[in-house]
Image (tube, rainbow, N blue to C red; front, side, top):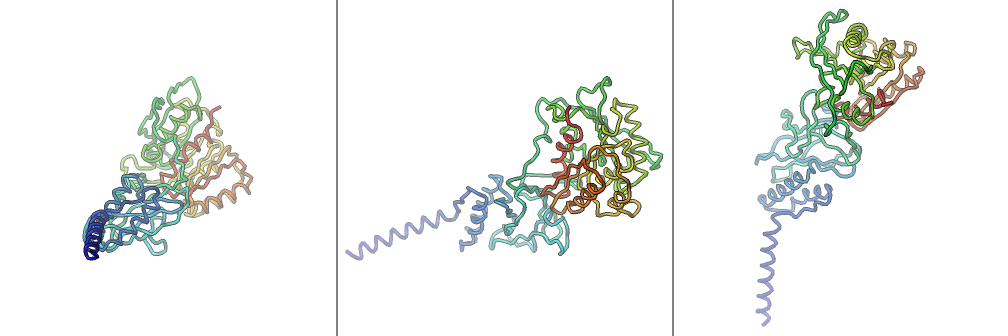
Length: 423
């Protein structure tokens, strides 16, 4: 009798073992949080079978992608994943981007991904970052192949093309930058050309006229450097943002002039670094050439408190320098991530210009900068210098982002509301 029951018990254990062997070839992941995804990925190593380990990892990866959770973001941490989709291991898989300043050296190392043994998957350790950050990045294979993250559909465009992006739980994207239904659209007059005597060559520009533009009304005007990027819907997207804010009654209708730094006859030749680095000749072109042209062609409200200049990076330097040199024309400055650390056109610096110059009669100054490998340190020094010189009309902002259009675009609504609030 004992042998009979023993045999029956052994048979039951055998059945349970077989069932467990069948069902555990696929992990039933806890998908309640990205953090549980991460620990589930780590747990695939418990399988001794290479086939089962690969299948479990594939199931988890598909689930993460279907839930739009790749990379895995939880709390103030992010974990990157990559499926090499090949049996042989790669020499190196890493993440480069905003988190290491896009540098390719040991001073600012990339984020390494380690292979999950006997699988095609690579995973990083949790990386701590600001819980309100937005980050651009790419996957780099064997030190030379830069890829968009194939598991992450979110894309942010920059001056050098698209990047993968992710945002942390407390990040807030502006709702004003996306096209909205039933919003009247302004008109863009593209690719006008003007000859500059001070620069000695032709400059190309485009003009945004707000919806309902009429010559019977006077409009404030905003000039933007890097105009071909500020007007691009994938980059600055200023026209769409202006349309939305005007329709909602948040800003007064405004004319916007997008000044293109590229040679209009050779668009691959970009003259921005020469033009924007505290170049008096360029300011002479803006104040003495382009501004009178715009006033003569369009219904402009004349006066420095109605005339603004907007720029980013080197263009941010130009905005600050322009209102210092010609406050009689430009009384509104918007300065995004100013590249203050770089020497300017005459081998001096923007800080030295402001230190040695009398306070200009500027109506408003906006400054924003990122804290992730951007210009927040020098921007804060510049802001403090402005205060010491007696400038009191400053709106200063820092964000846990980097030197990218994803950051700058999200600031455009606040800039327009600050410079041109609705009456």
